[in-house]
Image 1 (tube, rainbow, N blue to C red):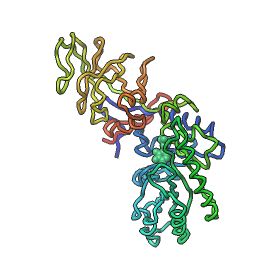
Image 2: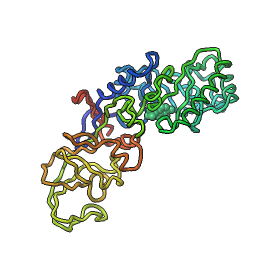
Image 3: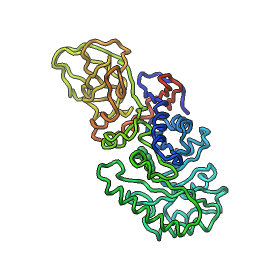
Image 4: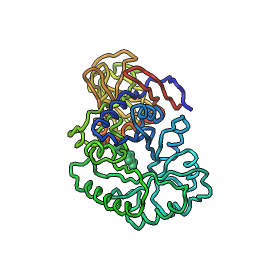
Length: 385
Ligand SMILES: *Cc1c(COP(=O)(O)O)cnc(C)c1O
């Protein structure tokens, strides 16, 4: 259960009108018949799954995609009755539960079908067959494997093949050789499929990168993840800017202690930082247990509309910043987001950590309450503590 308030001085803000904007921007460039599935796995990339899912559906998404059955069940429990696809592996023994909850599962293994006891299925089970065209993760790779799986599906009317799909590994790259190869393999598999499977199924191939860069090649729907949250999948796509995006996520805190300390005094564990001269030092109540990991030592945060560096080691629950002046307790500290003309973006934090923007909101832990905003007004709080 989560509570609708919190008593700490750090929180994430999730601007739901940005989610709305980003979905509508994508729909502008897609064919009219191409639908959008909102990818809300991993607690909606750390943003808050139920709230983002509800917003996405309101903004025109026709379905939801997650990685785990548990994530799908949470959405059903919240009263969401839109189509949900589990894109990862679901255990055969859980197929019955997926069917009962009208959750579509991803299939690609004959062993899986051999283990699913169709007699145990009390309702039809929706299947999306995954084709591995060059990601090398999950999916069938040959027409032989496809035929074997199709024969299992044919055998029992409780299996309903809704869709076939694939996932691209390099749709966000400058070099599109691998992308073309994957599309080519998909066409080869599909031309076989068409010959052996008379019924209509849906096709979905695109992630954010493919759906924004090649909207004309998208079929029944796309799986829109990172860019629904207002982030570009790579620096290449960011430069190309196929659509405008608004980032939804910001991370806020407040100064809870401010002091002036003498020259040659040390800050935090290991005394890795020593003041060169008398300095104003502020304490921020957020640390590595909140996902603001120790590698972020030296990164800048915003206070009073200016940048200030994190000095000394980041602790589990707190870190210190060097201030250019005295600031009152309660001064807003922005770790991700804007203050006046200054901004720290998710991309900047990702660059600092030598990783991708996807990882940043995902790593902000359950301990940081999510505050949902619409047009700058708070509409809901989710605090799992
Ligand atoms: C996560 C995921 C997506 C979404 O990718 P983005 O790059 O975030 O748009 C789409 N399809 C699959 C199979 C995924 O695992």
